[in-house]
Length: 401
Length: 233
Image (cartoon, rainbow over all chains, first blue to last red; front, side, top):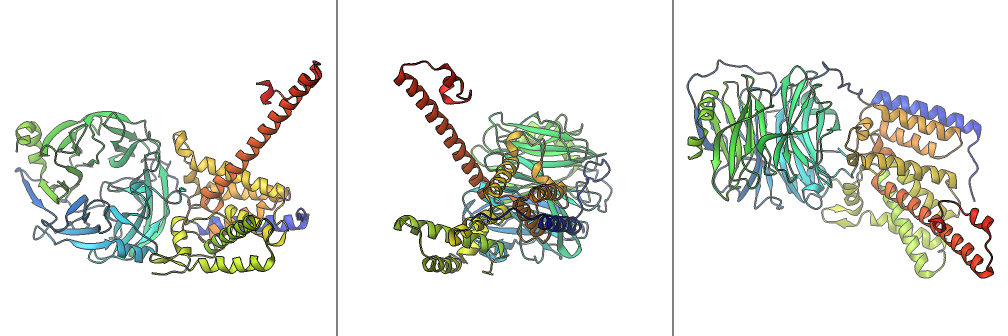
């Protein structure tokens, strides 16, 4: 039996209910951001910090971040500057990439005593299952970063089914700079049953306190996105929203570099046959982007990282090849990413892997690069701008190390 | 681990689908509609299945993990089918069903195929916060209610669910459409289109056969065949 059409009185009543619900939804949800306004955000590479006078003598040092044999395989380190001037690094390790025993580790570098703490196991598969209240097959890429309130945030990848394209992102907060962590919260980020959102790079910070975390989508088509997080004090996440960037497909792992005056540079890993590091530019704080353009630098479908130094130059760490990750090198741009000058080679050994660099500049002007060393350990290279200038002038001799 | 579902929407959706599936399979095996007692038994079984352990969690929670955002259009569609199955009465009229599937097909295509169009317009973005999605859904609901279509009520329910954040998602579009109802809508319209084409093809073939059988060339009959019919192609 077919129901009768709605009576007019019912229609009017339901229309009133609909309008009331719409008003309630508008009032209960956070206001929409107007990113189009040129002065609405931007865009510092790191939160405000106390800065010291630059050094005048060259400095360069290498050391290990992860102890030898701590886990059989390690990958995907990320180093971040804390508000107190110390550093924190995060990476994942286990039997191999994608195995069920992979856990996320962090270590802290204390500027006072100049040492890395022993690794701290923050979360593993079983703990993630418990905190997220759902099956978890494996863990992956992780980033850590502070917000303006002093809360330290961790965003990490978890996979429920399949490979990395079947993963989703989770977030947790620490109120004591990474000593202890709160429970994980799953972020629901895309309409594809919330699958295939990944993270790799550090965020940018808006002047209104929001955090713009570059992430990327990998299922079917690969493309960059920015996840805007609105954090409250005490480690509470007020809201979040995701914006897909209008870049071409098969470009992933975006790195955002604020250039000042509402301009932003994006560097992209190239998953296409061209195998060239690509860049895009924004003049409105990352709301809209130019078409991507190839740089003069190769990219073997591998992650890069870049940071704007206090002297205005942009420092890039990348794999200097179109295939393989056996050469890790620095490059410098003095014209906001338009052109690049290859610099010193950090690592080069045929058929070995040196990959996934992460760069940060500390309050003394020291530059810290962490990266995957043969998938066995996470290495930490520290140098200053004076060393960088000298090494950039004679990159070939340094490459022979 | 907490084994309880996050909201009532998930168990309602999953129970409906399980119940419909069990009823359908049994009717197919028996070759006749099943009685109310067996239907009630399958209902209880469907609810019980939600608590069957799958690894560290229950089946209900496991499905919720993989399908965190069942849309209100999808739930309404499943409930309408279930209601018809149980009571032999319609919860939604054919016009309501058509509107529901049309919204799912168009809305889902805009959302899920957006990356194929270059992402110049990011439709999913409009669903965050109190963005344009709220008033787009409101306008659509008001229009449907004005013409007496019950899907307007479903859209109002989706808005209410969004306002109360009853699903994992904080995006309004996820409360309206999900990939499953989108695929069901595309499949339904695809089958209808295929049936229409086949019917026209058959009609065209029959007319042609009629001409050959009588040996007469009846131009007026040929002219009445629509231009788009396969007989003309």
